Image: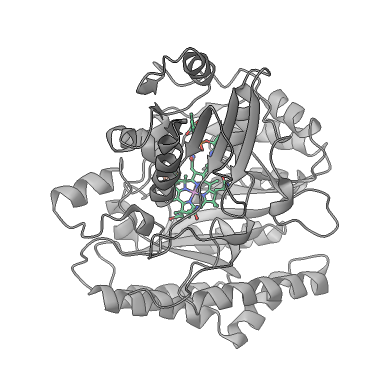
Length: 457
Ligand code: B12
Ligand code: SF4
């Protein structure tokens, strides 16, 4: 069969697809599906964020992945192919949580992880026996060695450092998270288990591809300290640099921070979310200890790992004062890189159920579930007030004097101070352009080509 696998882009407020000059990371899910596909099939992969889909080519099967933000574009693509009698299968986090909705646009919906289902689905498709829903009885065993296939993926559309041949390649060590934050989809999707791949498989995967830079997409790469120690020791023997995501609880294991740095870790995203203890408690994130944040940042910077701290706004107890205090916290700790997301009730989460029951969700347009739209009624703010404070904070941090200060601080931890300073200024200037156009500093694509960059509220 001729199979097309698509990572769809996003829709703008006029329901037109947004195109970017570059996409951020190569799509690991599609490279895994490709690798699982028997070799008698012909696979094409399109990352629509920075590539075009050729609707004039005939395919026997089109597979589309979708996070909530992408799903309305996924439905447009699915509808277009189905009009030409092409079979369409939808998968990924949004179709998995709302299969009945997705089913209206697809011949089949895959619920959850595809490792144990994909080959059967392909065989059913060949015999014209596709089932409406595919759902595995249990979570796949990560002991099975599956090396992603990157051969059908155009790696030129991803940013890379000029001295490297390949972009930062996506890879994973674990699935799931030991925590269950109220607003997060991860535990609801991957279950209460935290599954790990054998370290030897990860090393095989790295040895199998000549990239020198990696992004581990794990939600929390250091959940199991003993495993992490084994992993980092093995990675240290490879000449790579890498980044990933962690929770603040890493502060309990200073040796892990050292080992991570020695193994090539240069950047870590930390889900700080809030500097309010009571908010963290209310949203099941009490394991974040506000009083340890300063120390955590120091520990990471000590070993030259650049932390990016991620915050959320829109919690029930948030007030204008919370925005002010967060700004002071960032300036006091000289945190060079930050992300600010608006709390979003993603389908499947406890937070979604709660807000839905309270009838507080007023915006049901999935394309607005991008982390920069307020989609529910907040008791303490009108939407207008909220956006003023939200963008005001980001714009303040991207004033020229703050850009230079933050870039200077972050370069001070680097061995190549002036190159880092220059690179950080360029990066910050890019973010500045975005936040002054009311866009997230960083999203799935870089440099939008056709987007109307105006205030959207
Ligand atoms: C990497 C990542 C990104 C990357 C995506 C890069 C890329 N090209 O892949 C970037 C940085 C761009 C990103 C951005 C955002 N992300 Co994100 N991201 C992730 C993360 C950490 C890993 C995803 C991943 O690659 N997993 C590895 C692959 C192998 O797993 P998978 O995609 O689930 O695929 C498996 C199955 O789902 C299934 N499957 C998937 N697709 C398909 C398709 C078919 C046809 C089939 C058969 C099967 C199938 O089979 C695969 C193998 O088992 C997840 C968390 C998570 N653990 O999933 C969050 C997550 C997906 N992101 C999330 C969010 C909210 C965002 C943001 C909106 C930011 C925010 N904080 O608000 C932004 C903006 C969105 C955007 N695209 O611009 C949420 C999604 C919630 C939702 N319902 O949509 C998640 C779940 C995080 C969370 N804590 O809740 N993200
Ligand atoms: S720690 Fe992160 S990945 Fe884990 S449940 Fe909380 S938000 Fe989700």
